[in-house]
Image 1: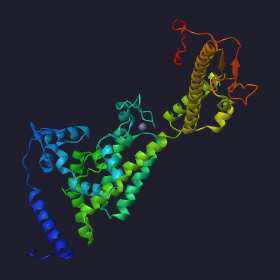
Image 2: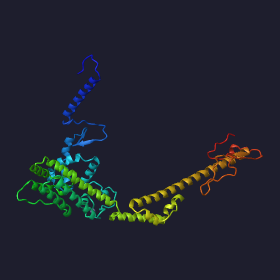
Image 3: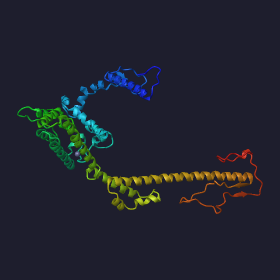
Length: 435
Ligand SMILES: [Zn+2]
């Protein structure tokens, strides 16, 4: 508290500031849930309109309702082939908790992957980075997110099976998952991948939580399960199982672990495997690229070293040597780039030399005219030391016999010729003498 007439020490000042800060925080806490009125901003460069009004402040909680409106839900349901009514069955809380714990880089990839915007051939073709949408592993006509997870390539299938074994081990040993839940999850994923249909729920003798899981997941779809959109009842069923075992774990932590530790890891490993295979030479696409690059190398040898500088011509000595030392796609690409740069450099160097020669010739011509003009006017003239010297064909300068002498003087005995203004000589940039 400030006292009149008293000088505050540093501790009192800090205390005073803390009180102000505390008041500000309390005020912010009171206001943050109250939508502030919209103020028009006539000079704003970027405008956000909401229901026909330009917003001066984006209130996320208000807009979120519209972002999750029926239109948007229908769009995503159609995109992910999900029953539009099944959105309410998804365990969004567990998914949100799992998402908060992943690193930012993985989070960015996951958003693109789950929304179908990662760099599959289908998307690369849409972005005009590829001319086709074929799968680089199995040559299927369209490689999208669905195909990526169900690719029929032998090694892709092996990777999938390895991932399922890892998931089974986690369900069995690490998380004490209920046996029926474990079997249903593994069956559902395998059924979806190998038959391209969702695993249908089996009618039990009496309805229970696990049966409810399969019903909800059937509506959500097993593709969505693989991406982390699991039904709420999985966590409830597992929670009941933990309670029956007397464990302190909860179904929510189990669901978060299932999404984070297993399902997203499966997606990531499949994506990594696909990229590793795509960039090695044992796929049809990579083999075609390799053949194309080898043909480009042969074409460079057919063109030959003409137009390249002498110091670079050894690059085109022997195709056998090149193919022996440059075998992979990156190596061949680097060799072709090297040749292209050597040709460009030679072309640029020759053009610069030609320009330099042209400038030298122009200087010589101007100096010759000046020399002649001086000689005719004064009866003697001096060779300028800056007189350009011609180049030899090999690029070296020609030398004078008396190279130590910077200039030479020429003279004649006859009287200088008087030039009138009518006899002026055009010496280009040479200034006209005062007569
Ligand atoms: Zn494929």
